[in-house]
Length: 219
Image 1 (cartoon, rainbow, N blue to C red):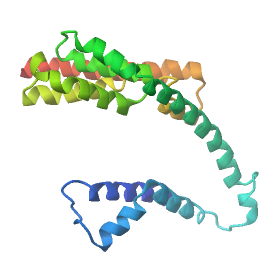
Image 2 (image 1 turned 45 degrees about the horizontal axis):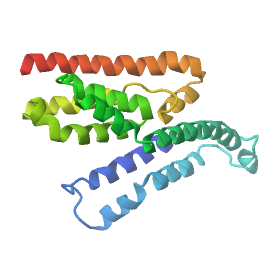
Image 3 (image 1 turned 180 degrees about the vertical axis):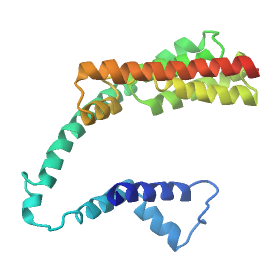
């Protein structure tokens, strides 16, 4: 399990060290070492090195295309290519400006706590990136919160959660994560739409409904 968990531990430790509070200090040997080892590429390379120690006897055959390293590369190559293509498609949609068009159109509607969810969901579905959906929705809604009556601390917290729920809806062909899930689990595209796409729709919608019910009780 060490080749899997050690890179994760290194990356998480580096992230903790970069928090604004600087828990490991502004500078120092430990901070600098973890800053280097915790970089994803370095951490994963360490994991690969540890994986090389797993066989009882290491020989050149393992590195050939018919060995376990070659089989791993062949298996991963297909997933990387498909995932990259899906991510590229999503990036094209992002650069087209569709996120701002959808967000601007929905921001004029008076939907209360449902508004951040619908904007984020519309942007996520259109261009595939949850990160872009969250950032764009937050940027659109920030100056409108007072006008919408959502400027109290409780309102702001619920808006953040509603945006997160909307950013789950829905994962399909323009989302690179859709291809990661379908390829690693051996699903074809049709099955992926039935399970991953529908699943994220249900997941985000239920989360939004939960936020709405909480807003009724606490506001």
